[in-house]
Length: 180
Image (cartoon, rainbow, N blue to C red; front, top):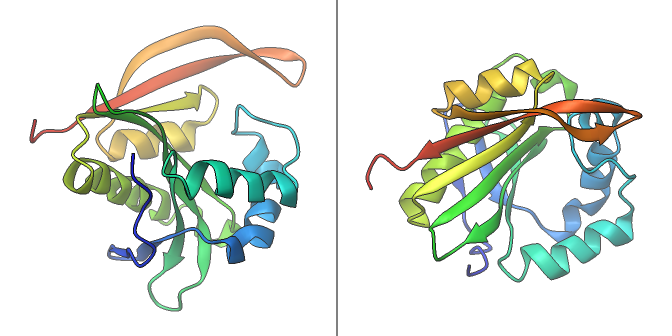
C-alpha cells in the first residue's frame, strides 16, 4: 500500500481525521500507555518514544499502516487515533483499529464516527473490499461502536489470548464494501 498523503483531511460531523506525524509522538505514547487504553489492546507492553518512532518510520511512513489522529472539529483538539494495518493487497482487505486517549470523548459518538470515517476512506479512497477488527469480548463499548459502524460479528474465539494472567475471548468483526 502506498503511504498516505500528508495533507489528507477526512471531515466528519463532530471530528476530522488527519495523518499522524512525528510531532504526535509524545501525546501518542502517553495515550498508548494509559491503563484505560492498554486494557483493550492485545499488545500490552509499555510503548516507548523509540518504539513509536520506529512504528512511524517502518510502518506508517512506508505505507504499511494508515494511521490518523482523531481531532475535534470545534477546536482541533486531538482525541485519539484510528488506523488501518495488515493490508492484503491481493485480497483487497485490511484490519482497522481505534483508541481514544482523552476521557472527555467517551460516550459521545466520537469512536463510532471515527470508525465510520475510516471505513469510508478504506472503501472509497483505497478501494478495499473488506475490513476486519479484533475486539476483546469484554470491551462492550468497542463491540457496540463496530456494530454501529456496520461491522458484523464473524467469529467468537473462546480463550484465544492469554492476557494479564488469564485467557480472554476475542471477537472478530468484519465489514464488506457495499460497492463491491
